[in-house]
Length: 177
Image 1 (cartoon, rainbow, N blue to C red):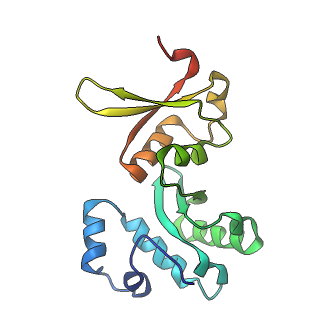
Image 2 (image 1 turned 45 degrees about the vertical axis):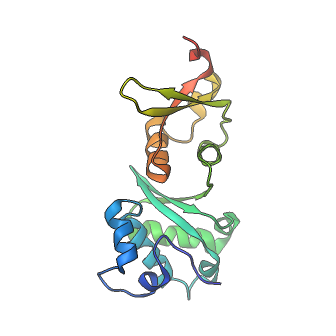
Image 3 (image 1 turned 90 degrees about the horizontal axis):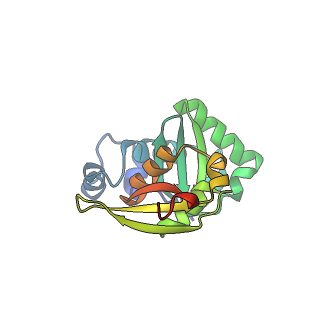
């Protein structure tokens, strides 16, 4: 097994300034970012020191205000081990921000569920706005608003970067008002 990253294996393993045409198109279109490229390459460079790196499947690396989210398809339990914590610490020292591993999901609802844990989603409604755009309203209990692991705007930003969808957090008491 070998590390899977948002860029192809060739671009991951070579330290060239340029990317292959396929990865360059992904970067130019915004489907991946320079952080996906740089941090994936840095993680790849540490594979001899941290053997478990070869088992990682990194889907995206999303920068939000004070941290990076390491969106992984592979199990997250490796980051609760000493080596996993050491790798996160090394990344934090290199990039000056906290790294938070989060489990990847293909479905938006499942991803949001993982992102806002321990808060439970009560429902998701689609809202059609006057300008023709669609926004998803993620409904949570009024009691849970202060338990969100990060600000609502940050959650919305992450979902937009990951899926290209606009969301808003709504409280159960606000529905129908």
